[in-house]
Length: 74
Image 1 (cartoon, one colour):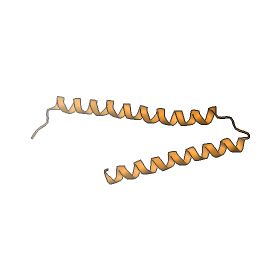
Image 2 (cartoon, one colour):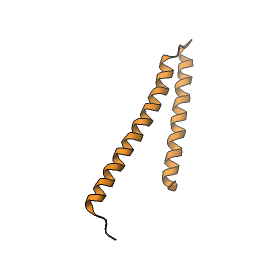
Image 3 (tube, rainbow, N blue to C red):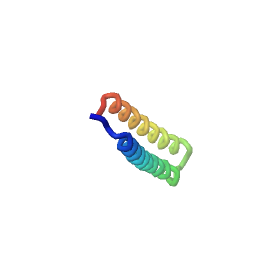
Image 4 (cartoon, rainbow, N blue to C red):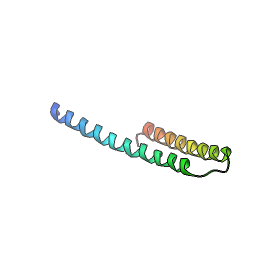
């Protein structure tokens, strides 16, 4: 069964559009998380550093989960 080249290009284009949409959603989510930290009033610098460290840990955990899922083909 041979797939038409035009169909393959259309599928690739749709896939790229969908991936770009999802990437935009992900970036927007994390931007909002950073914005919450930015807008919050902190008593001292160490409080803000703790918040940033927590955010970085969450981002790292998510990156590891996504990476693991990609390797497993989920």
